[in-house]
Picture 1 (cartoon, one colour):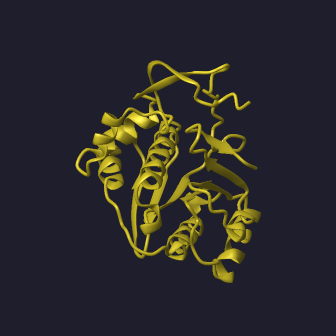
Picture 2: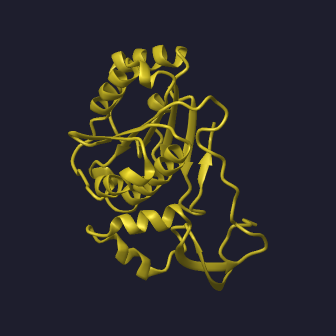
Length: 231
């Protein structure tokens, strides 16, 4: 028996399991106030049903960037057409959480949102940059997927001394063409220089060509609402 199976509604509680969120919370996804949804998701403050089960489905989360010296964080977030709907706001909520953690740890953050074109922002202080973060994540850029543009920007950053030994996080459903060989070689080159590449997969599609390049892989579990470490 699946211990996380939803057997019966017990009560309402605050959390971030998207499969249990009360309908009225999704009103926050209106374009002008959707940052409030991401904020409540990240802090685990969304109202949701608590189902009676044999065992709690709440899991202790491992830090995405644990186990290495803390340098800058580069995030590439997919906002292309294939991410419309739930995948997009899950991606943005996860991005919001990583930004908050990194800036609290005094780590610089550079974000590239990509579809056909890219949009970038550099962040250094949570309090001073909070409005910029929320405004940036409130935009959507629907269209095709061009991760190569985001990776080109990332490689340019990794060539700079201030971004050496950075953590790079790719957030996407990874429904995209195979990466050009140049980027495959660049990723391997920077991995040899201690840059760590992470992926957060949203959705059921598995892009093996990209996944095999990643140092650490994460997946959003639609059933539990958790981000699960794969490797």
